[in-house]
Image (cartoon, rainbow, N blue to C red):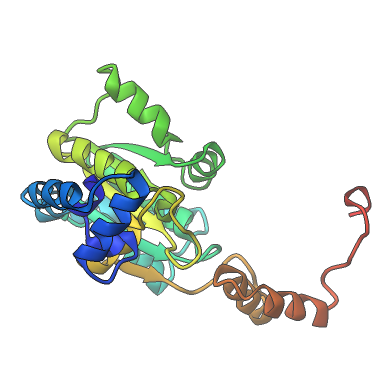
Length: 270
């Protein structure tokens, strides 16, 4: 029921009454009971709104320039879109939202942002729904990461709690369900921590009921990275975009046209 704190559209409904009916059917409850409870919950604060309203984690320009210079010395020069995302992530607003397809260099950008945050004295943590995603975030950005479930387990025991000096980066945020997103934002709000959500709402759908990342992006805005940097050839970049947006057949046609994949009857032959 806490889903209603984000937006009735998170239920996939056109209006609040439809959302209430869906919740009533799913939970075997009378519609009137759900309606009364929803109206009570409606008086509660949206934790996303509370976090977004704060502006307490702005990184001074000298720390940002230092991080960008260090990255350039390593041969990493951020694109225009990556630089915009970097500026957005390291700005003062305590809720950041970065949207980008796979291969657009989100992790590389976050690695530079991590250096800026750490130079400014912040502790940077990473989280994702799955262990593989958390490992990918850590390997790609250098941000120490773990699963959201692991973080919540620690918090429930009073361990490894967030503070106002923390920046929490959540990768593949489009996979996080509304209830879990609400819990994390609630903890961050209570601690005064900054949260940066990273993901692709077109490619990723929430496993738990509700599409919290999409709703937060629609409500609070964010920045988008669309230029694929992982591939060098234009056709490869186009194919990556096709894969990210569900146009698998077009992507395979592109690879087939360039004789860049082969078919095997058995996995062992691949």
